[in-house]
Image (cartoon, rainbow, N blue to C red; front, side):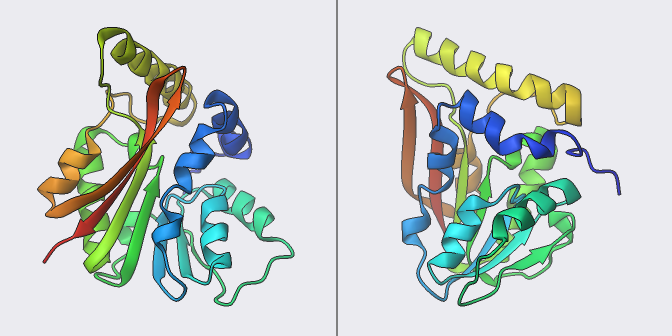
Length: 215
């Protein structure tokens, strides 16, 4: 199994934190306060997984999934000397191979869906929604859809393309425009409950979207 993050995986969190002036880590934990002790929570494409660790510390039953062995090793490094009421379950596999349908109270996809082409992203998002219980929640944190006045939209687009280009070149991630995640989530019969936006220079750059899966 080829690890596309064999090199980038070591600095993934650091690069994201610096590039976003600390906003990406804040975006990743934005909806954690909605999760209660005992909830079953899955983190897709967990990466270094600091938000998953924070969720486990709060008493949730956490499962993490990542296809990159390098990313999972970095996650393991962050777990050292930590213990939880419910040990974190770690899966080294493709998220599409996880078939625990309607098993989770929350499924989180933070800065994960943007690695895919539009066609594959919609398939992955639909699959994630199938893992959520009815009335459970799907959380997506990512680059915001360009909006606002013309200068704001241009800044948002430039910010996205400058970020995606190195990953396209180094990991083979898809090169595409920013996705309208709320629109895709609504098409899967998920109602948008809350959106938190994160600003730099008075411009929205990231958002965390909480959606509830309806019957």
